[in-house]
Length: 111
Image 1 (tube, rainbow, N blue to C red):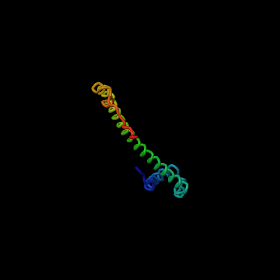
Image 2: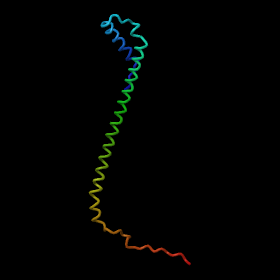
Image 3: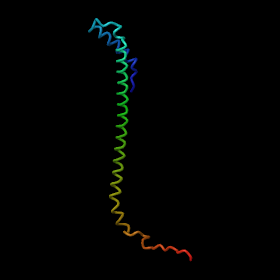
Image 4: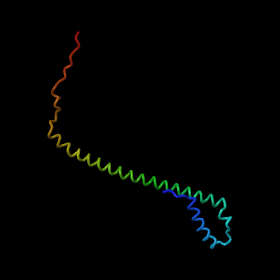
């Protein structure tokens, strides 16, 4: 979510100006539009934008962490299934490899 600072500042500025004038009658229009105030407002807008970008990135990271966690749980379940089925498979199959009794004979090169 990105804020358009110019629009927001002008809205806030008008509201702020009227309440500010009531509290501080000595403040005039020129003071409210001073470069220092403008710079501070621009910096504030930049900071707000940076915070919003960080919050957005954090939400993406959180979503990714949730999906990674779900994948991890699925993999752990599969691993548990494999571990639990492994001893049963050993009982069904002979311990020795079926081809282990066969010996390989290499043909010697003719002299």
